[in-house]
Length: 273
Image (cartoon, rainbow, N blue to C red):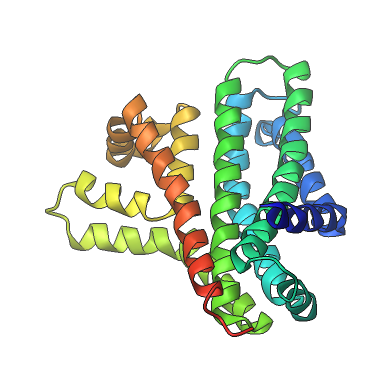
């Protein structure tokens, strides 16, 4: 397995040193601190707020930025360096090691940036306020990491499937729009059409099929805000508010990482490169 770690190490060092990765870490640190300090600006109050308010507010931005960043950088990693990829494949290393090594390297670099950004801001917020509701912030971090890994896996799949950088990037943007924006609109439309069907029957499979919705539910419940969404919120609390429900949601998120990555490996091993 030495070939895998060589590829992973090269990708990690390259992506870690990239300006986009540094900006990625800085943006999340700045956003978390801004959300905490200016969270009550509408009430003409500027002071650091605790983790419960920050977690719920920050996720509304995380859910847009993390998937888009993972999709763009992932597709670029696979399709943006064709000459380098051809050179690596000419070495005595298996294709599965090349692809998984690249994924691990990019994932490690982006995960480190996310950890530095959210972790550094979290330490500052804890010093300024307290550690109350720290669990909600940790859930935010864990789900953000899950979103990053799942959409990065999806980006690798799109890259090896399409190979062309422009086409892969266009597909990535479409996937981002459908999963982050259009999916909930479609779910609302389906719920209104099937009014006689139990809300649980519609919500459960729909949430499990989308990593964005899985993450949103986990952060909402960890922040104690599920009751704010009426009957839908009560249904979510009933399904996911227990340890077994949270475990099922976490397993579904892990599958959202494993399935696209396995599909990417399957396609990559059979492509003529």
